[in-house]
Image (cartoon, rainbow, N blue to C red; front, side):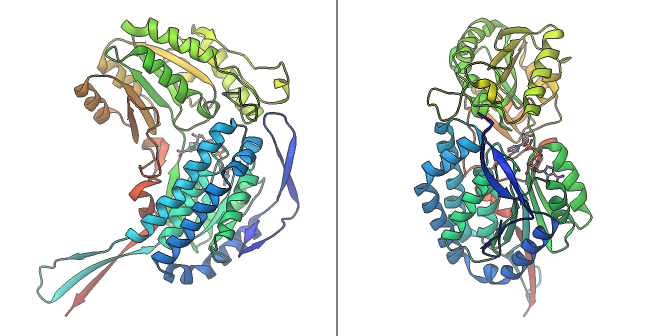
Length: 473
Ligand code: NAP
């Protein structure tokens, strides 16, 4: 663990495994509640000097961290593929995305502006100043084990906050590598602290209940996010939550069905479907169903599951047995209720794949609202297709979910594109675009997908308080 500028052991160690082979690839320190408190002590002690250091100094350190991360891109990507399973090419893309947050917030640090507000009284002046919220605690998931860290650490540090981070239990090695970069970049002791653990609850409890912590930032499941939000509410902590999704992908008859199917395949199987913005329900207008399904089926069947280090692999393993069980249960339920299986639909257990958690890329059609997959986040390589007849019907079905993270629309009709952009109850809408994400763009959801935004100009706001000065002159 990295606490107060020192690498420290835990009460013991826990093992980290490669999900493609089951092989043990390393050990991480077992932290607990006392380590979380020690890290918060360090973050509290470091806060005044870091907040006072000034935007240009903070910016320079983040800029250095960006340079170092880009220089170590290959090394970090290899570690990520070994620890998380995604194909190396995709790991390289993620490291670049992660580094983008360091660069973006190195720049935003210098743009935390105040305001002067005219008063109705001639002898009064109003000044508004933005201040760092204070000590931040953050919890991140395993599916994007480097970028989910920089998406929180970079804006927190840019704003002048100090931070304690707990990464996912299955990807602590990537987190350690990121904190080595922060150390090498000259981030002062206590400003950024890392607590690793295989038992998240006691650490999460300290994060939620220690009164010195002023902000909690969490990325993970809706279930855990809800529990942390409730625990943090007693102390009115600021909370940002990036939670689950159930993205609709809507293809209208005025779109090119082949182009749309290629897009659907590309975004659906990204990270083996283990992405919060992964399309979970693909709605296709009935009149173009045939060419769309034909292209999608060919694309899904052409996916190749395997070890991410093999450059022929296009999808890696799922992350656990539990993940395989959930995907299998959703597919079996859909088939029992009348869905059509085009390709896939089974666990892969040959050619060495039996050692990892591999599931065949799968295409289902004739999916209906009665099926589990229509309601639940899948987080796996299954593309479920649902046909519709009218725009109103598509919009109603797309919004028929308690999630509200990403959504996608394919249409060549400008008015329809605008109607869908306005009508979809989601934080992000990709119009003929499968990747509406960037360090420069606000990422986040509504409804059960969370609170707040990460990245963009809005990302730093989450770490700032507004202070008013009223001056009588
Ligand atoms: P998860 O089980 O909620 O885990 C996320 C993090 O929370 C991990 O670090 C986990 O630690 C920790 N955690 C679990 N229980 C906790 C507790 N009682 N107290 C404190 N921390 C606790 O989610 P996951 O299955 O790993 O991640 C997948 C979910 O994340 C999906 O729903 C996905 O949609 C969502 N996600 C959202 C976004 C977004 O930006 N909206 C991005 C990526 C993922 P352990 O690893 O030790 O369990």
